[in-house]
Amino acid sequence: MKLKGIELEGTYKVRYYNTYFEIYDEKSNRSYYEGSNGFWSKRKYDEKGNEIYFEDSDGYWAKWEYNEKGKEIYREYSDGYWAKSEYDEKGNVIYFEDKKGEIIDKRVKELTIEEIEKLLGCKIKIKK
Image (cartoon, rainbow, N blue to C red; front, top):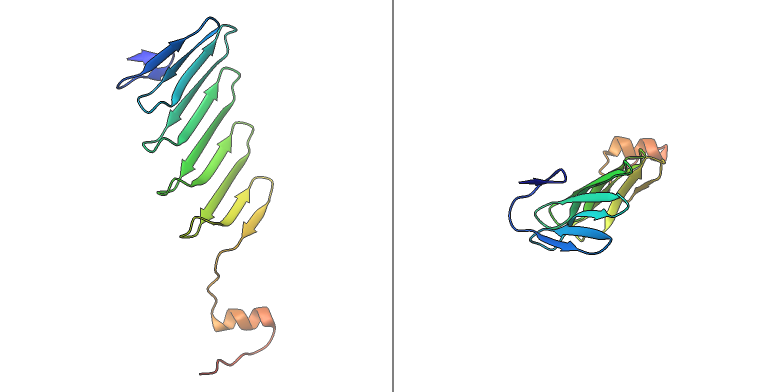
């Protein structure tokens, strides 16, 4: 069944008030909102309950992607902004980059001896 452009599968709860109504999915995530002023918004969620898409009647939209542990790895907004992140095994951010040019890079770098020598500007010898 389709309601207000949303494909409804499963059980949904509809809450209706004097000035707005809302639709919630089976995991209690708000999937749709509409006010008496005509403003509406709709959301989509992944199987873990993370919001993956948002859109409203003003033309604004946003989308998100998550890794297998539920950490946000990418986001993008209708105004052109985007950001991506990487995490270590403990869930700490080790890389961040966004449209504005901000870069945080705490990843472990693997270098060859030649690359290390080039960075140092001299020859090195590894002791055993």
